Length: 136
Image 1 (cartoon, rainbow, N blue to C red):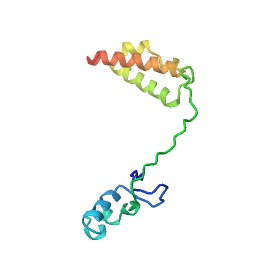
Image 2: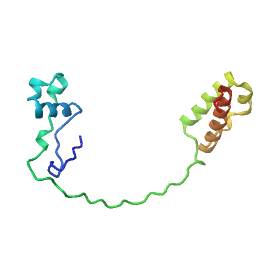
Image 3: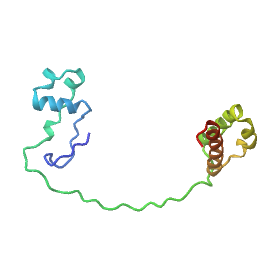
């Protein structure tokens, strides 16, 4: 869990918290011990976060962020298509064969080799399917 508050001491606490720690903390703060007052077993057994709060003046320190190295993006459309992309083209062609055989005849998934080929194939196939469905 990440706890951010000006009333939490700086540093890392290695206590294991879970989602149920939130209602367990509220129960402990306003009603009493979660083991006695929480309505659900998971909340009863969750670790409350009140121990993280410290009776201190609010902190006003700021983290120092240093910019990381810039990453430049290079298009990879000419790289080979992944197995998943090739399978998608095959499945899409099978659907076209049943629904729009004339379009399936124009599109050949065997010629799909690169990511760019997949993009063009899927674009043309989906355009045809959308036109048939009345979405275009």
